[in-house]
Length: 199
Image 1 (cartoon, helix red, strand yellow):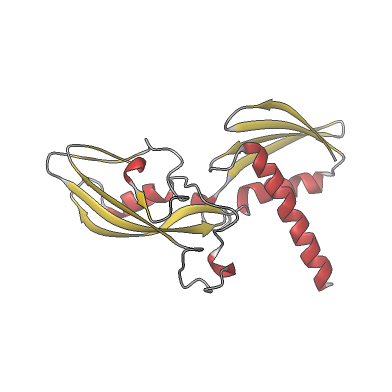
Image 2 (cartoon, one colour):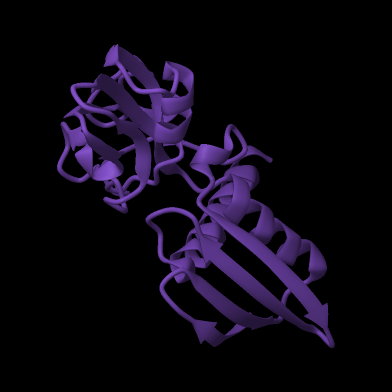
């Protein structure tokens, strides 16, 4: 496989890839979109919500906030030693309290784990008028894009011309765009090794 970087910025990368088949290109694209684990808020308990938005609308917005995490420590609930019951490796608590007037931003979330926090501090969640309050506690965990779009690590498309594939990869998570390609290749190799051991 030959890889050449054509363009690159903080959120996107364009790669020229030679030496693969259309089937492999499709697998790489699918893995980037659906199978790279990311951290997102899964459950929210509201203690107070005076804002104009209902609880479920705020919970939905919270779930779409990209979060950082430690790839070498945090794990998917179904692969955790606690069997998904909830521990520091597979669940992280975030707390939010804000009193108006003013906007409530992603940066207002306080995490129980310093390695898990919003990737961007200025994502608006809602607006509070004078003396209105918002108080909630949330639980974040790793998940996959094939389970819900909030866990989608990135977007990927490609074109094929004269034995060359041009990949356009955009990150929607804390991964750098080039890391998404690397993660996809590593996951594919893991799956092949697992398949070989089972045959």
